[in-house]
Length: 451
Image (tube, rainbow, N blue to C red):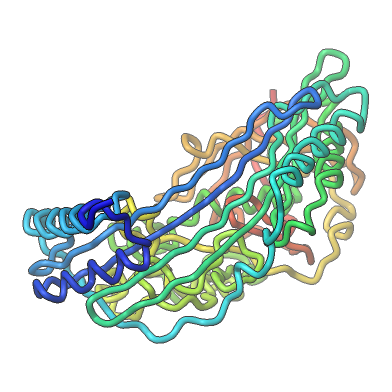
């Protein structure tokens, strides 16, 4: 291997690029990432899919006369890195200047252990056994289980490094292991499917049997569905379902969306926007958060951010540039889709804080709907207005007792109006694999379109 083809580590590549940019007097940011992942699926008692993937690369962002230029490379030889720097500078020269564009040397990030010893010494055979156990437990749980169309073991070992020519240099490592099961069940001509999943940073904590049994239980509960009524009814919304809705409408809390006139919350800081029972927080420092991080995509330290407190709009999420234009400081919410992406604004671990009401008490005396899931958000939810009309699943409740599942129906509302009708909040947060969590809530009214 010659010096021109030698592949540098991502750390060495970062150092090389920053040195070259400093020599050329080019303000530069380097975002480097390395990731190794495993995915295992089982079907019919055998391994049907086994994937190992390894990727690494660097993304560079040059600032030339107030304009950003991006490029990336997965070739970490010195000539390829030089080309990436040249491309970023050239792209910046072709771009328009942006107000607030700057590179900053942020303070020290918090200590967040996202690595530990979770996958240390875990061999391929152990990962395979987890996938096989997941399928076996689901198939043996009940004769009405016909197959496990979606079931797998996944893990990831990731490292992120950031540096800029202002002197910032930092990095973190994160790993996780996860299982997910979505069994197909059938009875009397009805086919239903629901599921469950488990996320952990410690392999030994995985319990594929428990995950499979929970997934089967959720799927079986949907059998025997009857047509849903049409009308407006009181309702309880499970934490998982409410979290799905919050994920769809999270862009309205983005400072970028606000400045672009694409958020219904613009100009409403300090105002009551939802029920006083609602407090919404984004916290990238949660040790077991799916999207936890010590710092954001610009290197800004992570810290919990309260977006809604007691029903009042308390803050927006900002990266450095949107913060500068809004006259505030970054909240540590710069986001990018890996080294190939551009910098935007995004949440980390978004969650509605739990209340004081035990979940059984939320159902007490209720005649109406228990909403457990929504789908079709890509077409049926508008984060610019907050309106949604979504295909849904759930159960009918009569005087506090869940009586039967419902055939597919629709629910329609405005997310702010819906959260304004919350009259009780449960005491247990459920998380989705979108890294959004919420407790069960009870709302005074929800419009339902039945079959």
